[in-house]
Amino acid sequence: MVGISYDALSTQSELTRYSNNRGLSFPIAAYERSIVADGYRITAQSSAVGIDANGVIQLRKGYGLQNRNEWQGWVDTLVG
Image 1 (cartoon, rainbow, N blue to C red):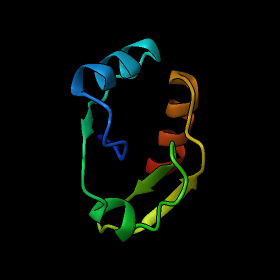
Image 2: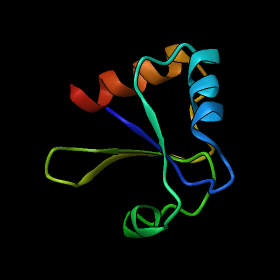
Image 3: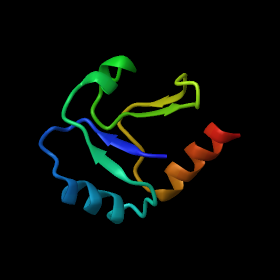
């Protein structure tokens, strides 16, 4: 699992701090181009999209997940 920040103004250190503050154990990468967001029709900042191994969206949540428990429940649903 990896997070991709669509906010071009975020630095890697800010993303690491964001992840650490929420107790997340997966990396979040800065991504300055919109190819990923456009390809998966992400229109709201802080959206979460669960993509399976075939590149198919299985889950979508606008305005993000706020803490480790929310992320864990969401991932558990995604992987079954």
